[in-house]
Length: 511
Image 1 (cartoon, rainbow, N blue to C red):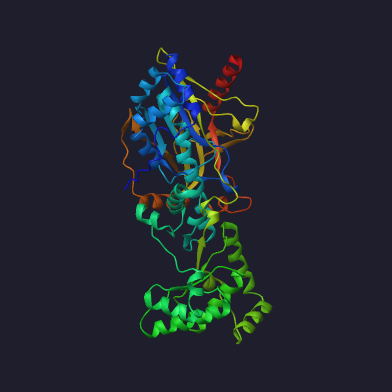
Image 2: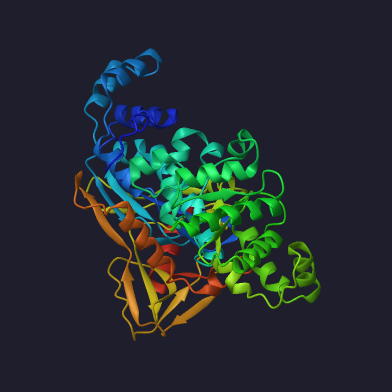
């Protein structure tokens, strides 16, 4: 179901958008047709791609866009706008076109995720809300995709509610994280509103409330005989594991099944191996090990790597043997890893070290009074900030189901398998690629609104998640690794490159 956020309305904009609208209106330019595109320049988290999310919230925003009488009264109180303009705002609705990638699509740097073609005032006033509704969820979905990939497809639980940027941020991030790769959330409201699976166990305070840890586990098992998962690091991790095993075996004798343990502090690698060995010795093959404590994609990858390294070391195995009081032989690293579940909180719900995505919304074309369209380009002293002007299309080349490159072309260009062509690097025109080894060409954008009418049926959240997973799998492993990922190419066709150069030269002369 679509959740109506009362704060997502026509006033969700920057003040300068309204002053520009007033100026356009007063000079009679407000109904000129224009085209704006959304894209980002640099992929987040040191990666090469983003997972495009936020389209469904944008659809709802555009469908319901209107200034209420209360909004108009507030704008009047600012003593900035005259009554003629305020009266005009009362009737302002979105009546333009929107074409977009599907939610969950892989979006590469410099490739437009969506295009708005509408009257100038309509396309302009929605800019701030559009960026708000797209940038943050795209950031979080991309983070979740990195986490899930480095968890080697083990279960990932999003535990970030208490560290999120407010209630709205928490809900947006929970939904985006689920699309990007998280399997469940601790946020019950997100579960209620969106149908995301919810998960969680108990806190340290629960254990501390009871006279001792064993009593706390026993009571929990009585209440949750088929889903009990015990937090074992309140006092001493090893003793906590022993108590959890004792209760799990009692449950097993009664035909019940404990789910596992959670470890939230200490050496997560060491205690994962110890827990696995103890579970094996206790004949508890179904017990899972949930790890938490400020995890992110890098720490998860390191945990896997260190488990594989540690179980090969004889000295390490002797330490494990001393810990459990019995000789431990060979340990399968993969058997340990197969038990793992990752609870990721702050780093996932907030974006961690990267707090925002630099997505932008830029003017690319303006319709002249005679009906012709004139491209617009931002010519910057920083080459990476130069935009791709005019109307264009993007196609994706694939080989054996894997992404080869995204190609920016003129609308009438035909790109087909077995027809080689030259692609030009937009950041370095001297770098060119001959594309010939591709067997599939995909069109990435679909119409969403046509003349203000919604022509697209948004899929369910679970369908979006499945689509995002399928699309992420088109990226080769070497292009998803944490360090020095292999390049994902974006190229211009020779015709579009020549067109862009001509637009730049004309704009430079005008400037």
